[in-house]
Amino acid sequence: MPRSTADVSIVPGFFGAIPSGDGVLFRIWAPDVRSISLELLDGRAAGTHPLAGAEHGTFETWVRGAADGNKYLYVVDDGERLPDPASRFQAEGVHGPSQIVDPGRYRWRDDRWRPGSPLDMVVYALHIGTFTPRGTFTSALERLPYLRDLGVTVIELMPLADFAGMRNWGYDGVSLFAPSRAYGTPDDLRAFVDAAHDNGLAVMLDVVYNHLGPEGAYLPRFTRRYHTDRHKTPWGNAVNLDGPESAMARRFIIDNATHWVREYHFDGLRLDATHALLDDTEPNIIIELAAAVRAVTSRPVFIHAEDDRNLAPMVEDADDGGWGLDGVWADDFHHVLRRMIAGDSHGYFADFAGNAAELAIVLRQGWLYTGQMSVQKKMPRGTDPSAVPMYRFVICLQNHDQIGNRACGDRLHHSVGEDAWRAASVVLLTSAGTPLLFMGQEWAASSPFEYFTDLEPGLGRLVTEGRRAEFAEFPAFSDEIDRRKIPDPQSQSTFAASHLSWGEQVLPMHARALALYRQLLALRREHAGLRGSDLREGEAIATDDESVVVRRSEGNETFWVVARFKTAGEVDLASAAATLGHDLAHAEIETVLDTEHAEFVADPQAVVVSSGSGGSSVRFARPGALILKER
Image (cartoon, rainbow, N blue to C red):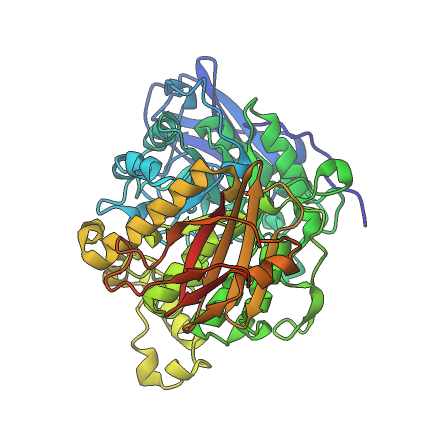
């Protein structure tokens, strides 16, 4: 494996319009333009300013009198006027002029803030545009006390990089340094993060570096070297991370990552689809990025990756030869449970039998595939995770992908019974891994999360047609008439339908779901034995095809989680405990939480716990779960 091709030092705040002294330094990477100048549209220094060529295909100029709020464009070649690919704000949209932003003007209040232990982490992912009716940073800020009281510890914001139009589900960003003006101003975002810290909540940002969106991406107009045909991704040519002249592409990405932490005080980043960051160099871009981000602040910064390869080195310690990331999305948990209780079998679900034995393996080791042949991928998948602390596996019952990538954006609880949903929720929130909730999950929200865009009409039609064609192989959409029922991404109604309906929390079914989540999160917060674990293995066993028993222990506390997912039946707790190496013959056990409690269900059906000389057992009248504690 070749060494990194980077031949430039990484200096934070390199690209864009950087306030400096009584002016602004403008720097842009533009090796493929013939001529370039800066046009300041307003302010004391308004006018045209030439740029001088600098190292590695960059051009720069310092303009005295340029200031925060001034707007500007770059004029290239035959007079084409273009926004800055590293713009900090696009007040008039991604096709309009860029705006100078001085991050030093904001007065932070979080000097003493430090995020909590990773073992306490409970992540709440949300989309700013659909989280509240107004869909802004300011309106989301008003919900921070609710999230604090709910019991989450980390807010994960879906991508904010500005996009074409006024609505997007987040993964079509093109102005990678600019928070979308659809949600507010850069200082509105700073105020959100500041207030979150004041409420004891960490904030991480989902960032997308594997591709640029289909409309408004001006970086390739300045440089063809940002992409390469050496590698292909689902979005086309890959970002040039290891080919000739890749150093500046790497620098652009790392500068972007560090700016979110430096200029906005984010506590962490979630790297989207890292399996599509195709990089044959050593060290790879992810290792370099993580090191650079952590170097720009004295605060702890956590880095999570979304990666479907089940690569243990990603979350093994750097001292042991790993990449040193803090967490990785471990989707096998979701896939096993969805196959088990909802019956999904298409695509990657074909790799899973969906039984309790698979779930127990995931709960013990973090993921299921450790090198076995994948039917869906037609190749081996996964590595041995035995050196990875359990808390570094980020698991969920639903996330933006597992909802938004479905034809109609339906959530898991829309497809399964309330009883099975309750059982799955208990297992998620008592796991040794790091649980992730998707906004509204805690009250079993009725709203879908559909795929939505606001692209120019011609491109938008292609997206709509492509979206519907994508599901043609699914039996439910094999007929063209049925495919027409798939929501149109370009329609305002698709976006509107995806907004949370906060008022429904008081309705009986939703109120019961919320009560369960609040109680589960309170137990996780109050008991070290129910939090994330830094052990390298969990304790879990399947007692039959639809039941699991999990042991969680820390200090003097020992808990048993017993869950059944599909039908009525009995779980032999004593036998399961013995198989795990524990004797319950003389243990006194109390029920800490029962999903059949009247607070959580309209028609309780008693779960019977029996114990005696013959052992302990749990009889369920339908799917459900118990949390038991040894006294």
